[in-house]
Length: 249
Image (cartoon, rainbow, N blue to C red; front, side, top):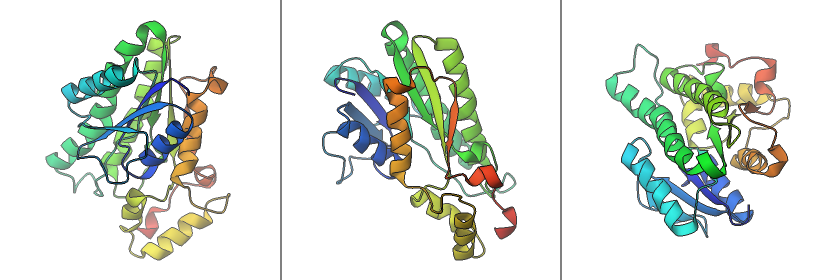
């Protein structure tokens, strides 16, 4: 990744922070962002831009900032996301606007802005989806729907903008972050729900943010040059066996 300019949205914690750390370690010039000020533990070597990717102007500004500091953007990782722990019947308009603006419009805004950079000289887009876009997590209706959107958009970008641009998605399973902990907290018995989820993993453990960062590193490299329009499930084999059990929640 030497001399590559990469943008990673939502790089302050969890999966995003692990991706930023991996790309910096691999030699990329990394710009990351969030809606608040830079975190105290921002990965050394990364550049922070305060931006809300659901705002078109902020997405454009983020691309401009990266161009100004390091040159043309060659890699975009759309990681920023939010979740609301509600069913459809429980969700209100504010819930819809929050989840869809960040998880859907934010990805769309960043892809559209980056594609203008990548159209002539090429580039690589990696979207962070979720197994929740394939199998529905209980009481996560809007989040589930938003991640299905990300998977569909990924395929469209690969088809419409190849061969100059490759676009793929990663569908993480249970990666132990604050968002995952919030999901387990919905259960009637969170400890039992977590034990059940763990038992469904053929690899015998939950995922770590670094597991997703490793997949990003491969998709960002020339080793994956023949890969585009694909959604990769990285879940320790959990969905190969069965979907999540709604009866536990």
